[in-house]
Image (cartoon, rainbow, N blue to C red; front, side, top):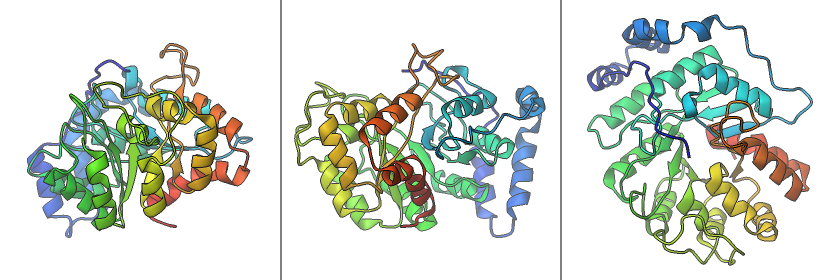
Amino acid sequence: MPQPMTDPSLSISSKSVSNLASEQTQRTRRDCLRQLAGWGAAAMATQFAETALAQPVSEPKKDRRKLLDCHLHINHFDRSVEDTIRHMDATGTTKAFVLPLETGEGGVTLRSETVLHAFHLYPDRVIPFCQTDIRQPDVLERIKAYHLLGCRGIGEQKEHLPLNDKRVEAVIALCDELNWPITIHFQDGPGGYNQGLADHLEAYLKRYQRVRIIGHAQTFWANISADVPPAEKSLYPTGPVKPGGLLDRLLGDYPNLYCDMSAGSGFNALSRDEEFTAGFITRHPKQMLFGSDCPCRDGAGENFKGTCYNTQLQAFLERIVTDESILDDIFFHNAERALNGTA
């Protein structure tokens, strides 16, 4: 996976964001954006000079179906905002949820401010999410400020905490209040994130029914099978899927749960037993979200050992899903529903 990266953009201080949130009833969104620009104007002027002056990036190909990537970061392998848009063009991606990682967990650091800047450069292509360290005491105020600035959800929520930690629940509860989706990285085992999916996810789905929980990563997808090996043994189980897995039951019981198909974890789970996967998608056609989490720049894996998660998954789904209406849902409409909270 990508090596550690840093985001050079100027971060907003905790105090400044908290103050902004507390004053949000007196401020318009335009005022807040102006203040955000003021905080980082000097740094951003230098960092984004070339991007702002660049020629407009071409629109996606018109002869392809609409494609909404539910999981994209900007700075994988130092990929710029403009490179990210080029990746979208090359893969036929119309829009993307662009997910920051402010804490740097997992080796990539991407500020919510950078995502918001990309949104203002490419408002028809970028759907901005926010993410901030939920271990900090002002986390809820910061999220409310990002909401006011135009963010549409939280993700990728990824800290070294058990899933039943009260701080995790507080963020999920705020998403429920804001009618937001939240993309959660589930990874059990040493050094994992949001650990304890099998024991704790259902309680959140039952308690908070407006929030859309978008499941991502190794432990989430390992539970496609009823036979889940210990995380210490394998986070990428292979071989035939044993029917009766936790995901099948939770998706059937809770329409507010969605599956993010991105990255190696999603593709491994979907491709390990194609016959099972075809039935799994047919059983839950409205809860499957196309996503890539792809770090390459050109849609052909030029900087990622010849692999593009986006085109790889597109080709796989077009081969095993024969119903065009289901494909349209997976590639675009389901993500719209998850974003907007519509059935």
